[in-house]
Amino acid sequence: MEKKFEQEPSDVVKIVLFGPESTGKTTLSDQLAREYNTVWVPEYAREYLQNKWNNERKTCEPKDLLPIAEGQMRLENELAKKATDVLICDTDLLETKVYSEAYYLGYCDPVLEKYALNNHYDLYFLTYIDVPWVGDDLRDKPNERERMFNYFKETLEKYNRNFIILTGGREERLATAVKHIDNLLKNK
Image (cartoon, rainbow, N blue to C red; front, side, top):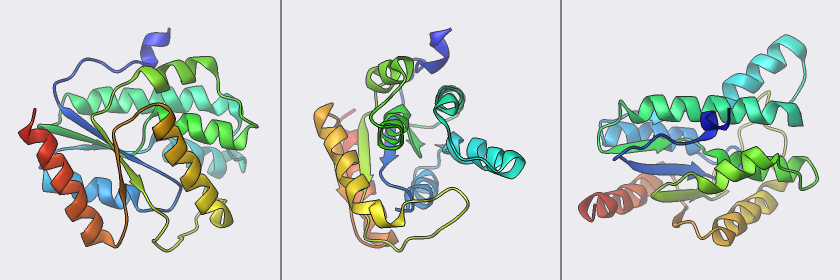
């Protein structure tokens, strides 16, 4: 049963866009996929939770986190097979773990936590909060961006993840990300 939360073996370099809501992760994921002529893994939680909102007018609940994690890993494993040298992930299970803890008084399902910590990525890009907030049906913490950014950063540090903080506008973030991905590919 738990295999559905596991990464399948892959030779591609895996990059994760990581950080608070409305900080440009999806935009940069798309830009990077185009830059490297590859695919990118969308955030499964967006689709899942938007459908929940549209159909039930309910937001995320703890019982949603394992189905979200399962959907995220299914997408990642499918798309890793289609990637060129790089797979860009608009999120990962570690981000789901952060949101679980932030929204549910420190709680994270042990299965989610296990795979959030076991799955491997080559580099995380932590997106800073220096871009304008854009609200939608799912985003709900515009006044907590700094606190959430710090929580994301502390999580990457706590679990010794290789990460770079991305700041600035679209072009600056893209250029910084490309420089670091190119270095990874050169050293692979």
